[in-house]
Length: 352
Image (cartoon, rainbow, N blue to C red; front, side, top):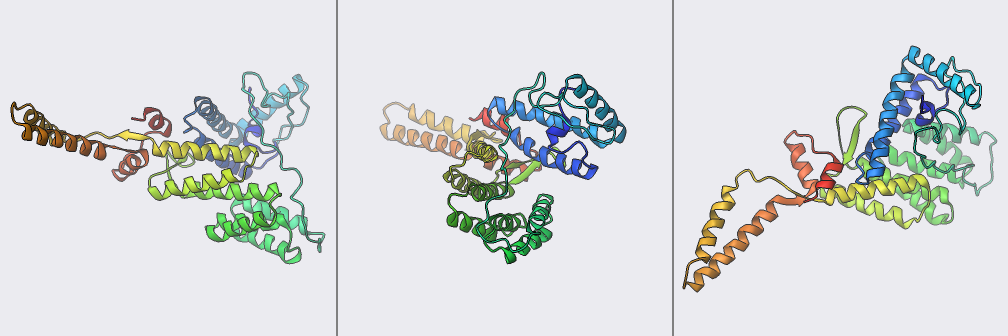
């Protein structure tokens, strides 16, 4: 066992099956996107992570397989001095020297996202000692996509502590997640303007901008849970470019935000990469082109040579205009024909 599946999925060893399923879906969604990166190292790392997630799904969702995995994990942790936590019911713990840590044998060191630490500071008085529990429930509902319940929790806190930044940013994220993008971004942008030095607010705004850009793209993939975003229209390309610039202007050093920026850069670059499409009727270009060349070859007829040269330019320009196009147009046409477009990485590497 060279990898800790609980660490890969970012869940505790005692997580329930529903939590593991949700974590698998979330992690697969993230890393399948990153498989499209044109950077060979990032692409290889993402492909390996997807394989690890697939293996974790097989090992942790089957009760018998999970029991066997937990026993083996516990044995390795004891052998390596990584702890002796029980694993019969998914218990146990791993540390940096454990079998599945990011520094484990044969695995490349993976940058760990910095912890956000304690919640963002609150500028208003605390009127209710129970507000923290409401904020925690709101965050949990937000992660689960239960927008109405999350909104109720954050609004409860806002009524009693109007200046609570955590509730304000959570409320903005709820609006964005529920499809009320304009309202959600307005809340987050107002919070960023009112508290320009609060990094928590900026991170929430950057994450919302990234999610809006991704949600506006088409989802193409091999099956459920393996979709990845694809830009197939000028509007989607413009939205991705605008949100990318807005995120970059925030000048954040957060690990997750940096990954979002890299993904959007890759998607925009791949969508703009030129592609030559195949001409299904080359005679439409070839026959007039041969005729124009023959006309230019006529001796002692200067006017005809000029006309022939003009038509050569027109024919070549028409062919280039019709068959050399950005990748997003090519993908849209392929999807319209019921075909699955080639992978982002292949398209980007082929170029013209």
